[in-house]
Length: 219
Image 1: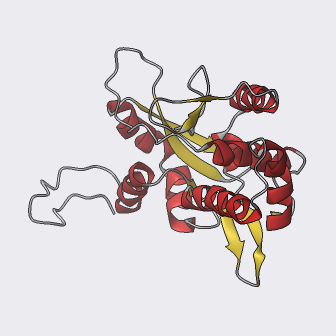
Image 2 (image 1 turned 45 degrees about the horizontal axis):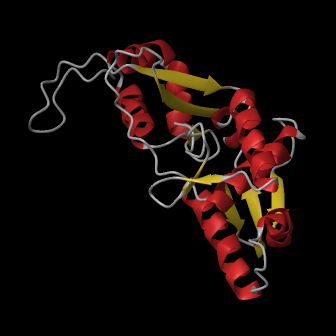
Image 3 (image 1 turned 180 degrees about the horizontal axis):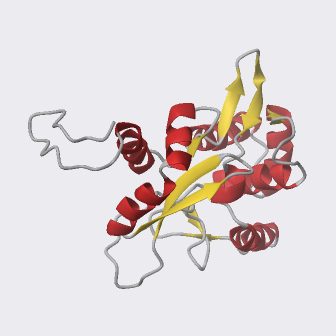
């Protein structure tokens, strides 16, 4: 079923994309990423009409990335320096959220794409972030709020999902692997080590960042 007929008032009816491919393209543009487990129809359409969808994204200076092992698909800005920047710049992650992102990515580094879901608990997250408490900060309630804020940031990015059967457990999305590649992980780990030595910097907007700007979530 190609879109030979208009489906809404201003539609010209000239699209040659199959309807499922057209819907998949729209979902790709609207979402940070899609996974087979959460978006089965979109995932199937992307694989079935990969070439056609790539061509449409090429027209927008975007690149389709498909990780078949982790069953994740997303778009990236093309590397052409002269191309218009279509994707909005994400708000920089907070210091704690940046560190938590490193933790999530490293947890998945020890698992196989076909293995069981990676599950972590709140205590593990807190213990990972605890060494980065500010000097003299013994306020446990304040630290708890920082942990909760970092968890919310990852949940907003759809990289952490609370286990419906145990609210202290969180499932790590496999999308974190292709979204944060090896090179990006190495840059973020360098930032992590700088923080351990008190060399972490703060951006002019008051949010955490790094000297090379790597505090922002990858596209």
